[in-house]
Length: 449
Image 1 (cartoon, helix red, strand yellow):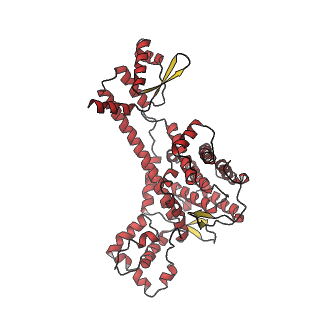
Image 2 (cartoon, one colour):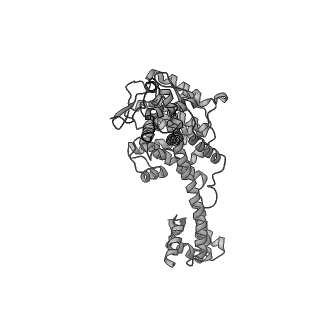
Image 3 (cartoon, helix red, strand yellow):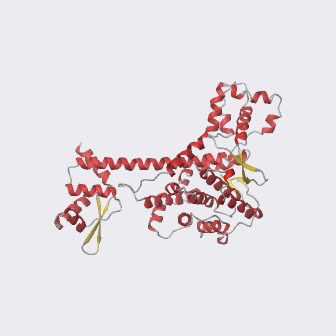
């Protein structure tokens, strides 16, 4: 079994008689022009292209591929990353990548308005997103803990019960470490420290945590098949030094957009495979670290690994396409940036949803007949400030009513499901937003109709 089909050998295609004439016929064929545009915009691999070529167009699938590959090569730039044979990886920026870069830059230049009424605080949203990233990155590496359990684990701070939960906690600690050190240059010691945080208590051989691998018998498998054999152990440190130089120095003569460069760093560390285990988690964390170090604070709001997790097979193939097709790193860049695009879309949807909820809540409360004006004011405030705590005394003072009246207001809101009541001490009750206020208002509207 093979995971992917290697593309045809270009030398073999070009060696055939009359090949040049055949290849230059390709863009003249109407049925192929749109395919060529789409193949480059979506950055199709060989196996995705050959099945889309119409029959009886006068050229072979291999000749179409040679034309497409020729165009890609002519646009490519060389990177400092080399494979195990010393051959450089290359890349170019098709239109689909320009679109994502433009969107990221536009959003990074603005303000994420999660501090406006009705939205969780900016810090709370960031923490939730980074928790999602920690969970998804762990699940990509095989952690089987369900999302709800994992989120509860991180929110409560309880001790992990098994290796899977420990992996998730480690990833969360690593994300916090990255935020705390976002302004620091990368170094070999810091990468080792990051790996140590990510792998502590989860490796079969604990001494490997934070230490570069010493063995060459490392194989990367997917679905039982060996798909990658990394560089020799004695090359690891020198390759890492080159990666660190690439990450720390922004060469103005060979400038690379930070989002593209972050994805390259992700691939590069995974390719070097400097550790016996935990390389994928380290590579993804390093990409976040690089982007935050370049003031792309937008990425604190995005869980990219959550979108890798949607199609983990495509994540693996992004590596394999790159290695099988002449070290063309563009495949990996397209997959990474498409995942970033999906994360941005999710953020937009969230912000739009919250805006709609606030508009809807205002209208629903205006027409709601089951609450007095004081209670309506408090419900709207609770939707705007989901972390607020209410007391009878504060409600009494705010509205200038008797203690018993204030108490009845809050108790009624708790009984209707707008607030959640908890006792503090023998006599005092605290009231918290239930998080279901809009849902309760909608339910009542349906019943009234």
